Image 1 (tube, rainbow, N blue to C red):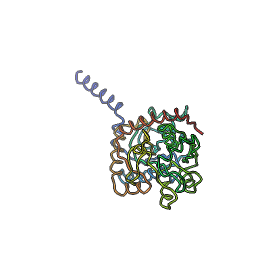
Image 2: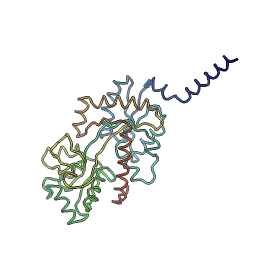
Image 3: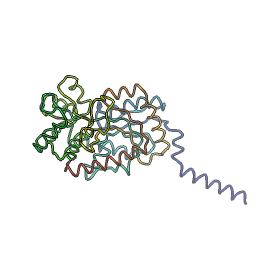
Image 4: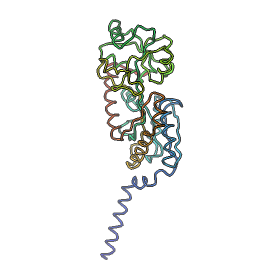
Length: 327
C-alpha cells in the first residue's frame, strides 16, 4: 500500500510538472516548422529590410524557413493585432518600428493592443538616426541659424517629415519644446518624397532618415545640420548631434525590433535573442544595414523592454506638450 501511495504521489508530481512546464518542453523542440515574421509596412522599408536580412540568416541558423509577411494599414494596428492574437509559441513574430511600439500608445487614445500586456520584447534589430537637413540654398547653415529664425518667426519655418505622428515629426516638436520655438510641420507620404521636397527647395528643412537624405547630400542639394540622436553615428563621425549643438534632451531615432506574443516561453525568447545577437555581429549584416544608414544593435530582451518603457514615457510627454494629433 505504501508503494502504491508513493507511486501515486510521484505520478501526481509528474503531471503537475508537465502542466506547469509546457514552455520548456516546447523550447527543446523549437523550431520544428516555419516561422512567420509579420511586418507592418510594405516591402522596401526599414522594418521590411531588417526582417528579410535577419530572417534569411535565421533560416540558416535554425534550420527552418523564416517567412516575411507584409501586413500594411491601420497605423500598424493590423500587423500588431495579428501577432497579439497568434499562439504564443514562437512561430508568429512581429517586426515593428518605434512607431507601433512607443508612438501609437502616446498618440492614440484607443488602440487595439497594449504593448506591456500583449507583447514580449525579443531583440533590437537596428537603429536608424534621423538628421535635420537643409536645402543647400536655404539661409540655414547651422542649427543656430534654424533656432534663431524660428524664434524670430514662430510657427513659420517649414520642416518636412515622412508623415504626421512619425518619429521624424516628433523630433521636430522635440526641438521646438527644447528651444522654446515652434515650427511649421509639413508632412509627406514617406521619407523619399520628404527628402525630394527638401532637395528641390520646396521646403527649406527636413527631419529625415539618413537613407532619405543621403542621395541628395551626395548630389550637393542638401546639407546635414545635425543628428537628432543623443550619440553620434558611425555613418559620418563628423556630424554633430543636436545635444552637442545646444539643443537639450533630443534623442530621436527610428529603431526596429522583434517582438513575440506575451506568453511566449522565455526559453524560446532567449533562443531567438541569442541567435539574433550572433547574426547582428556578422560583418556582412552590419555592412548591409550600414548601407542604409542603420546600425545593428545587440540588446537583451530586458534591455529592450526598458528602452520601450523609457521611449514611451518621453514620447507621451512630447505628444501632450506639443498637442500632436493623429491624422
